[in-house]
Image (cartoon, rainbow, N blue to C red; front, side):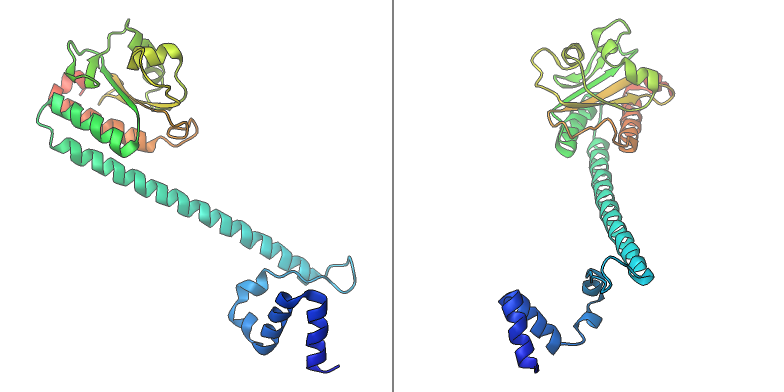
Length: 242
């Protein structure tokens, strides 16, 4: 059987598309050498039936390992990209807060920037030892007496001393954001204070994926330190335990 007859038989058995691939490979004999990734992805059955040679088994293991490493690399790249975005957002928050000249301006800048950069729908800030609210409306830091409903709502962050992500009860939502608050699917509670916990910053979103209970909290910890330092500048060290 000559080459043309072989091509006609392959075309009849496999169809025009596969026949074109066969013809291309026969014409470009160095294709697989130039594209080893294509060769690595191929699986060729052993002539002996179910028996598999040691080399074939090793190649199969290496192919599986390569696939796992490729998937892991993709995951690491995605995490690195997400972390880069978080750092950029935190930097934008810091720049917005640097221009504040007093506590009210600080809270206004904080609320606006956090909503924009972190895409949250509600922000609460409370501080124990504060006698009157600083700022106006939703962008203010409120007194947080120990017997107040808002204080009960953030008791977890006072106990842990670290950011807490998890669902809010209806009572917590009303105590922090009022009875008319939207359905907040994912909140994050961030401790405030330079030495110990003296207050809490609560960020909440209607997006259930915004703050996941299993997510890392380093970014939120850094945000808490940044806000605590800024509040200390405008409210005095005693208010933040410095």
